[in-house]
Image (cartoon, rainbow, N blue to C red; front, side, top):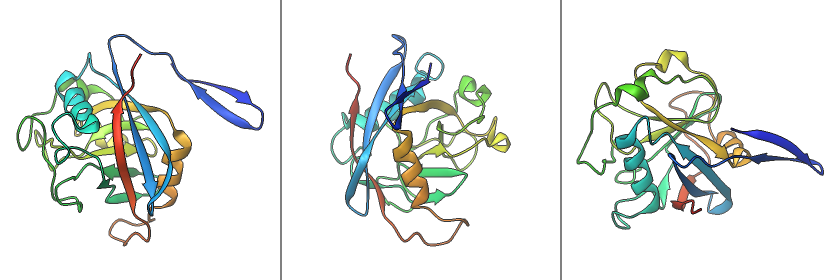
Length: 190
């Protein structure tokens, strides 16, 4: 689990690897300036199909044109979500899964709760419409429980997510003045 230990004047986050889960990282930039990496723990044993989709799109194993690399986080609402993963259109109307256009919700993921900051969930346009778009939650969102598949959580790079949020807007539909991008990603090796 997560723990925090003071290290000089900074807080350092540490985590323990679980053998039954996958771990991926993403390098993030704001306005073409690298701000750091985030690391995600994927709930592979609970939502294997969703975790595999996210992992392969993060690592780029399906090809450079079929990955999150160099894709925008097109919707950032302070206190709510950082939404990314539309690597085909870049505006929230595109993206696709490794299984084709869309894939079904996994029941275990619908039972998991949007209970805290840094939870990862699939963005969708209704039941069973998962593609490649995902959200990093910026706080609890119980109204999304049972409607969006929860598939993991950010376990390192919290300060990077905080900077992503700061580059966002207060109201949905407001234009962003910053470009937040996933530059590249990979799997965390043992």
